[in-house]
Each structure stands twice: as C-alpha cells, then as structure tokens.
Length: 265
Image (cartoon, rainbow, N blue to C red; front, side, top):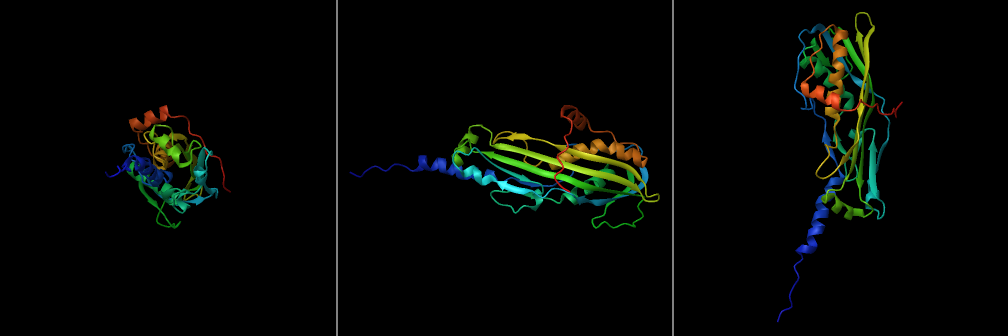
C-alpha cells in the first residue's frame, strides 16, 4: 500500500499571497494635467495679453531617503521614506517610481489654464527661459516644495504583517505637498503686477481596499491653481472664469491649504 502524499497547495497559498503583496512596497505615479477631476470653464471676457510662462527655479530640499528596509526587521512596526525630489529617485523595491519634471510641469499647467479658460489672447510655456516672442507679460516663479512621504506597516511581524493588510488593516500612509511662489511681470514697465503663492499638503492612511492614489500632485495643483486663477485674471484685465461646481464643493469641504515647511535654500 502506497503512503499517502499531502498536497502542497495549502502551504503554498500563504507564500503566493506574500509574493503578490510584496509588489505593494513600490508606488508608481506619473504627472498628467489636467487631472480629469474638474471640467473646463471659460471666461466671458479675456484680456488682450500674451503671457510667457517660464520654468520654475528649483529651491527644494535635497532629502531623498528610504528606510523601507526596516519593514523586514522583526519587531520593528514600520518602514518609511521621504523624498523632496520624487522624480529624482532610482526606482526600486524600496523607493518611489514617479515620472515627472515639476519645474516644467507646473508652469506648463498654468499656460494650459490661461488658454483653456480663455483668459488671454495667447499663452505659451518657454522651456529654456527664452523671451522676445512679443509677450506682454512674463510669469515666473520658484518651486519650494514637491514632496512625497510614505510608510508601510509591518506590525512588528516583518513580511508576515502583509497578511494583516489583506484583513483590512492599514498598509501605511502617504503624504504629498506642493509649494510654488509666482510673480507676473509686465514687460513694458518691468513692474510686478501680481504675485501669489500656491500651496497645499495632505496626509492619508492607505489600505489595500481604501485610500486615494499614492501621488495626488496633479489634482492638488489643479484645485489650488484654479482657485488662484481669479486673482491672475484680474491682474491681466480679464474676467475670471467661473469655478466648476465640483471644485466649489471640494474647496468648501476640504480643510484650508497647509503650506509645507521650507526645506530648501
């Protein structure tokens, strides 16, 4: 009589689950604007202006640190990371994988808004700081913050803590932040006719079945930028475009924007 063989499937199931969950260490994101959260609205009376939007001067901090490896150490409850420059990391299992160029993406979005809201006769992004295109105004600025912070909870169980994620316990947290200082210069007089800061930051608990996407930069930027476009429109002599109803509701429900700490020069 042959001895019975135990099927390996019950033993392989937890291992397979852990291998699938291991991919959750790395977060993925890519800049895309408009964010798709809000419809386009247009001004009833635009300005006869040509605004040339320049890249931002990068004054962010230089901290790009991942301590995610602590997740694997038994009895240590958490692994974490913080990136002042998430687009500058080397993607891997312990770092972010974010594609973008904030010093170009953010001002290019301003040029897009000026055009799609019909606030000016012409708006262009000047990627190499060039001038002399016949512009009446130049919009320039400084990038103070564009950060992401992340953590993964192991609950002191090393990789086996991921099984608790499947049961609905939080898998970690994520925080995003943006801060840009802007000024609008009238070319003929050389005077600054408008200046303003656009900023926001947030903090969310993330789970396998709940929580927002890890990178919320585009929606955050569009929300706060369009909130400020009325000031910019009036400085140019245009009538501000009405805000979409969903954006009005979001601005009313969300807490007041919090400026990220200045970690750069």
